[in-house]
Image 1 (tube, rainbow, N blue to C red):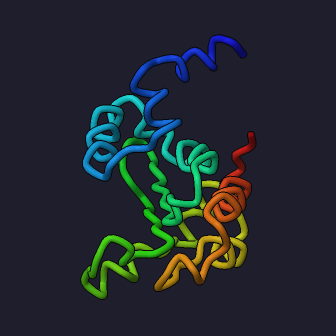
Image 2: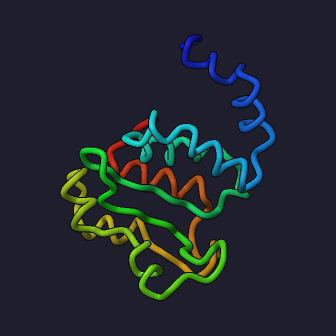
Length: 139
């Protein structure tokens, strides 16, 4: 357990955990980690449940053999307008998620829903917990 907690002592990780990141810093961080954790994004999304409610926009990506096969964003236009086709594409694909995780498609549709505003969804930690459970992640 202590070894897993050692990451929190790293200055960059400590700053992220306790002070958050600006959007550009967050993007740079994800870019730096991509090659290491590309296959681990659902678990990272579940871990984000530890973040405060300022992270109201919930997102996950599912990968199979190194290729993205599904992407979900709870509020597709959270950062600004996107083309209508992208709004639809950013909804979870219940068939793909079911195939990858064994989750019932109807449950995927019920849990991984989209909205026009974060106010239309449960609090981010609650939604992340539901998605983590849906994906079969624990902890």
